[in-house]
Image (cartoon, rainbow, N blue to C red; front, top):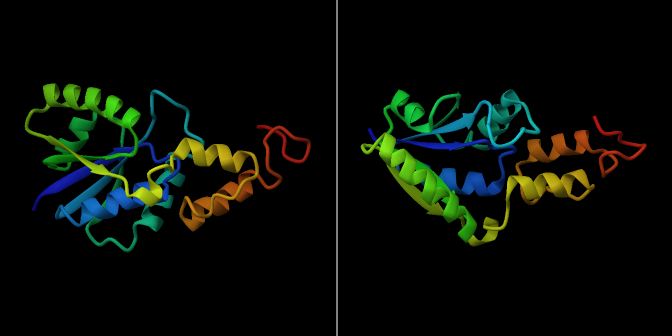
Length: 171
């Protein structure tokens, strides 16, 4: 059985993530979606429990996909699951620059674990978690970009649109 991991913050999961993970599930015997418990480069909007719940719901149609949280190096997470590959999605050129650096570091740490890149499908190649958060915070609809439970949670967080307004004071 060949296992791959798909690590990320998933803050929140988007249809772009679902696209890449679904396609990875068609290639590998088992795919473990790794949710970064405490990202160092940004403060998540959603708790790790919410992110895991959103992912499990969005990926429930995939029998060979599991979701787990990790707080260690991605290569150590891969080893914990006996994974032979790390799957990463690419949307735009700037994604490649970052992923190239991460690939070289991971290869130095774990030459036995290969990184596989999946190009996002054209219909979701422009969707990013940060873009979705921005749209939702200003009252825009994100229904076409994220699973239903995520869109509903945004509506709860920003019922009147823009944060910081009298109707929706910033936390």
